Image (cartoon, rainbow over all chains, first blue to last red; front, side, top):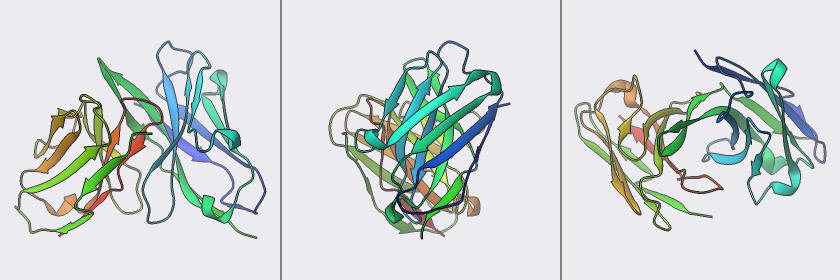
Length: 122
Length: 106
């Protein structure tokens, strides 16, 4: 059974760096083909994909946020960490991590964490 | 980036109604579309992948179709627990992009 859970601060100040941890179980990022994604959702708005990290440490980032995002993994701890620099109030959102599954010829996020609401305010 | 649009952005329907949500991609994406249901205060839940394949455990009243640029999600007989927002997503190329969502009210 796959589970994921996000943890980290729920309040950050403008210009600060946000660090979120996704702790998962039921799969290993040491296994070929496995990947985890990060997605955010401002209150009342749509979902926005942020980043992927793969079993081989390959990483993909949203082009619009690439300069502010870093994603890393700790395979031994079953954790993925997302950092986002220079946070501003418009970055207030619920952040989700999710397991990316391959279905023969396509992919989708088949399991999601519960999400963590991060508010940016002084 | 491939833009995904949805229509309508909100709808109100009755129990037992057939509901159809449309998603359009800004360019052809074969069948690389997933549909998610998101209930208030919850994480999204995968309903459909590859445009028309039903995720395990999802009720068969959820039907996906389409290819290329035009896709639809149909709820064949709306149930009270279907109150939610529904998002399409293209998984054809990075960056993965989502539609704006369709809010279904009952």
